[in-house]
Length: 278
Image: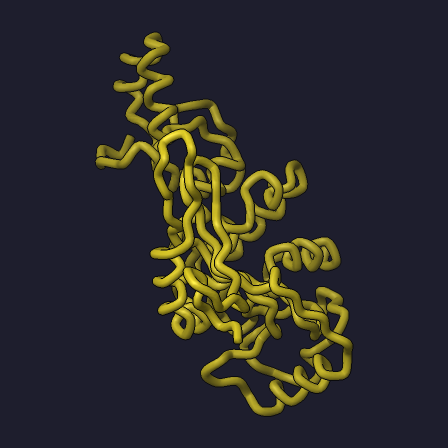
């Protein structure tokens, strides 16, 4: 509608979708004149849908707009978080959209910085299991501006995104902007050239393309630099508890097309799967 050019996968069909908080203005809508011309032609509408044009809804808006890398800013982060919380009360966005897309969303910290959920910790008002804020005052606590009440509910909501509330080893996804990726990028490149699914129907091999690295990891520990007192506190807690690790915990993940995917397990070291194993 704004007159710009878009790829079909970025577009929505015009609709009477209810505006809830003003964020919907960022959705890219197919021009009304074009839509009115083709609306009666089901073949064209079906063809556009096949190309990725969708009806505007809460779930589709989150997936195609809010989850887009760079969409969340310091200025709109609180509004986005409140919108996601409200939508999640109606549907489980975690079931409807999935971890891969939602991991792109950043959140505002108490000190005004944007971080991935996995780099943040619940501040005291959200009632974390381990109240880290009492012993460490770093830029790791999620902003309290997201809510005036419902702190417990928001805490549970943030935990589903990957915000930590206790000191323990947990499963975390790392994408291309992470230090983990920088360290393992040669293995990612190797995986995309060696991990594939074979199709008997076409008699072809379909190779993985990278989505994320899944690792069982200690929260809030930055590989390059972490405050000494924070590191000491975290490792003391982690090492005081039993820990079980399995081959299935750490892997490079990516789709191969046709609804199929592949995992390159980091503990493997054999022909065609040369990773970190012994």
